[in-house]
Amino acid sequence: MNTATSLSDNSFKKIIGNFKKNIYPFVTTLAICIFIALQPIKKSFATDITILFWLLGTLLLATGKLPYSILRPYKGIIITGLIFFLISATSLLSSSYTFRIQELEPELRMLLLPLTIVGIYYSGINFKHLLIALMVGSLSYAWVAYNQSGGFEMLRRAHGDENAVGFGNGSFLLATISVYLSLSHWKSSKFYFIIGIVSATLFLYSAIAANTRGSLLAIPAISIFVIFNLRKVGVTIGTLAAVTLISAAIYQSPLKAGFSRANENFIRYAEGSENNKNSTGYRLMLWESAICMAKKEPFFGVGTHKFRAATQDRSLDCDYNSIEPKRYFTQAHSLYFNTLATMGFSGLLCLILFGYFVCKESLSLHPYHPHRYAAVIALLTIAGYSLTVDAFFIRFIADKHLTLLGIVLGIMLHEQKKITSELQHQPSS
Image 1 (cartoon, rainbow, N blue to C red):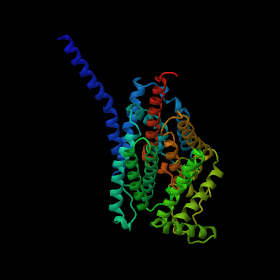
Image 2: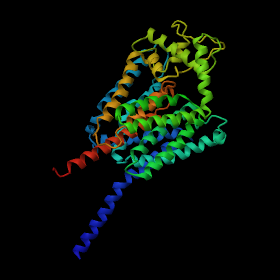
Image 3: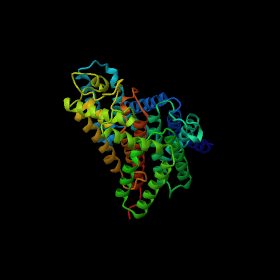
Image 4: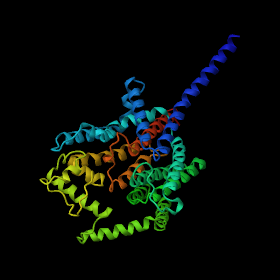
């Protein structure tokens, strides 16, 4: 009787243990599904889910459930994120223009990124869970793109619940991550390989439907990284073939006309033509203004989020907008030029160092890590389209780009622990 009771108790404890073990990955995967799938429908969901990850990370560290030492592999990322926030705060407080402290909300993303990593790490999800979430999200993105762009004819620009540029860049980021994770599962699971390819195709369709070109700047950077880092003939041929295929697809898509217009507008700008009321002409003028501001305020810039005020400041004399009627923008339409103008060379240097540490520290994980390039691929994609837009100008405390990077870094850290544990338990030869 006692033996039967003991076995029953052990079985019950085992069931409870398995439930607890699987409930966290399930709930987290569901949250990421919501994060990706509902973002193009209502982008505030991206903020809501990110805040949940931050709260979870804070709770885990505050209660001692997880030690701070688990973040040691990412100390460079954490330190540069903190410094970037401090520079942005210093820049705003020292600005000669009126400001509200709430304007620093977007820069909090860098400061709070480690909390996302902690929450994802604790959940125990892996890249297969992320692929499932990407598959669910790709259906949502494709549905929104199809409805907003006039079907497959793409007569109008798809934009989701944001502007077309943000929608297109986000779609392309999700596409590149899907492609990488799909290829990294080629040998281990054909099922997840197919899921990744389907997701990437739907996300790429959404990016093309958005009719935005800036995200494609990431393709050369990713291709060069893959070719020179892996140094394999098969990888080189496959990468060049993929780039050729994508280029051919773009040539046959509505983006072809956009590239032609951009080339013509650049030539017109270089020739000094007054007819520059177009996206390319405005961007180049804004970049000139940003360089002018950096010369006037080289260390901390004119003030975080004060680009518009600075261009309208006649005493600063950094307004290159000679077109009438004049248009003024809240950003320089480039993460790099906008950071240079508003936070100076210190802000731009810190931003570059942040990217450097994301690459260095994610690649420093165990060489047997099956997805060790995931964070680099995500960062190169973000770095590519950031040349033509500044994500920090969006006045939300969170955004999908950095949150997705935090999710990838959190999964990598968890898988690193799993690999290390398995190697430690292997019998020595």
